[in-house]
Amino acid sequence: MKGQVDYMLDVRGIISPFSLLKVSLIYQQMKPCQIMEITGCDPDMQRDLLRILPDASYEVICREHQTTDMENMKVRLEKRNPIDVKPLK
Image (tube, rainbow, N blue to C red; front, side):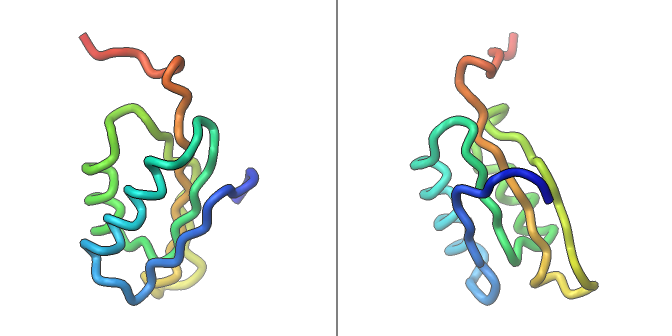
């Protein structure tokens, strides 16, 4: 994975709704162009996470898993600059 990580979250073993709440609260505090790395983000949580974050406000930089164990999956999100976000018509 490339790029400097500004926020690292480990949500392994945390109940999914609480994980989503934790990630969304930190995401709101992030500045544009900052990167968040989430460890333990299984495919179901990834899907739910991308539903609750504001559309077009982030970019998935990388998805990685080191083993077949879903708890070790990592996702990196970069918060986009609001100037770069184009409104949908």
